[in-house]
Length: 118
Image (cartoon, rainbow, N blue to C red; front, side, top):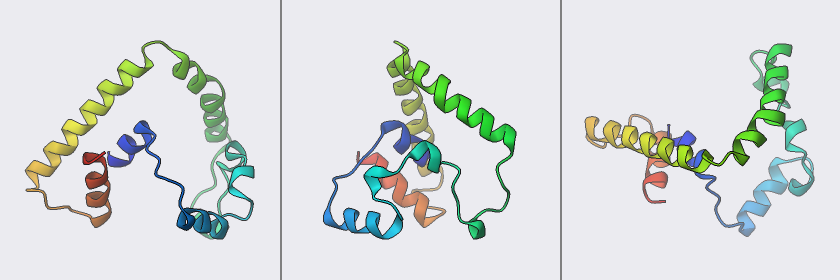
């Protein structure tokens, strides 16, 4: 849920020298030249358990090409997004309280800490 919250908030940190160095090390092309819609299904052979099916690719392309732009222009989009973010935050606080703020996974704990202080 923490990743969903961070993605929905479109959280972006400052572009530092470290970020620029990581981008040049991780990507084979310059970061600002990458076509992300084409790169969406690109993965190293070793990292791919199953190839995406043709149906998945068609649905994904349709959603990204037609549905997402329409929803982003929709007047109630901001209201629905804020309600969803509030609902996610309630779940995250509930999970923290029921586990007595002990993170079950170090990655999840860091993500929750970031989103609580944003």
